[in-house]
Image (tube, rainbow over all chains, first blue to last red; front, top):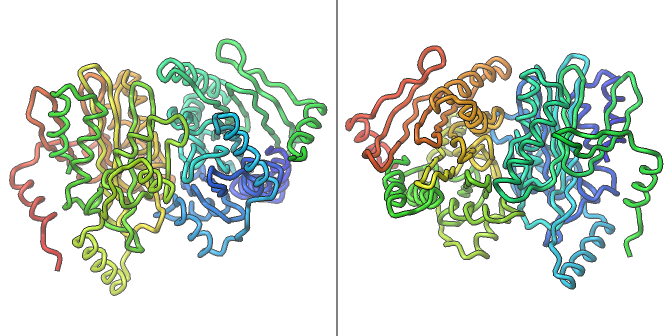
Length: 307
Length: 307
């Protein structure tokens, strides 16, 4: 999902853009693409048919954070979050207050609900009604960590949240420490998965902290994610999907996940690459490059006609 | 502020109430009292004159979290948060979606804006206009950690947020890891202060983590709060008010703060007591019982006529 954004972000960095510019570019690319059902334009609406979006932006040099939750009708929630991060007060805005802020500040307004997303919603509503299904599935935040030539790091997230969520439901994406965290002197992390469970563990903060203790990003992801997966399963009886990515201030990266998870990595030296990760044995992660076959099937799936 | 609630909570625990019952009782007592300007009934409204409230509830046995932000016209936001904590999905609700949930679930609705709070708001608006003042001051969340005879722990927070906040502004109070965190096998922590800065440090999570490594609550508070105070001052150039309280699963407590801060502690053996804390030298905290004189002056101040 983030791959085209990663390509754009590397271009931004090559043109002397900051890590903040790179995160914003990356996430805007994902928000603007109509075939991703869980971020920005084309995202799936809540149980009442309204597309509510969450986003956050954090500067690793200063710890400044901007975030929005339950914002509607704005083209790029990540840009609103970035602007809010410059404010000392009122830097996390939710609901109508967030939408009003975006409007007053002149951010581009847009009907973000596509016909395709509306049709998927209608169809799902019918299925839930007819088959008495659990309405919740589909949560796939874009989360990104960037590092620029000056050594500054930035983290960002954007999501339309859980498909069929109740109005005003907020997941981990705009929550510092859970959805994202970054410290330019150490590194950053970002999450996707079931926000209700991710916020029980503050895993993005924990991964950054472990990298600060000297662990590699991969060691930090493995240790934080799988030990909390085990702890939550024991104490709560279940554990939702967790997928975390991390990068340290040397550009080394890591990932850990309890479900199949794809992600993209790139820098100025190599062509960005997409990988697929799965939970391995003994708190490790299996990571492999995706095949062209996988990519073709993915593209076909996300663009498949909705009957 | 929390003292009358602490007295009530101890009563609840003595009557076989759980730590969850105790936190809810404690915080409801604070929410219901009309002379606290920063929590529940009598809380000060936002810049548009609307009283928006935030609250959270976390179970230390299971890590279940319920939270609301920007909720309006509900008598006890903490009770709404507690109810939400029972849900696997949609357990954090904001804005109109949160208020609608409370209404649908039958929580008591109430106009929470008192005449006194409205008068303070009007007066402040005039002062800001006439003297070109920074509009923001007054943030005093009630945060509480409880421990019951079964060894279960619960954390809770409730706040009307920053006085004169912009509509939809959310602070740290409903954010896991920043405003609160609890693990019954270790302990819990809760925060008050400038939410925008507290969420930069995830201090409640960090304090619980440090207690898990064997630090006493006081050591954990001192280490987490003052080291992040220093780090933020260096990296961001400034640091808002931070006041954190913590208790471990043995009932030992600690506090750290970079501003004068009062708090209340009690158990079944001793009469609950109010203390005043200030930042000491070399990352320590000075803690003293308050005097009757201090208490009389406080009561006079919060009940002073508004001209």
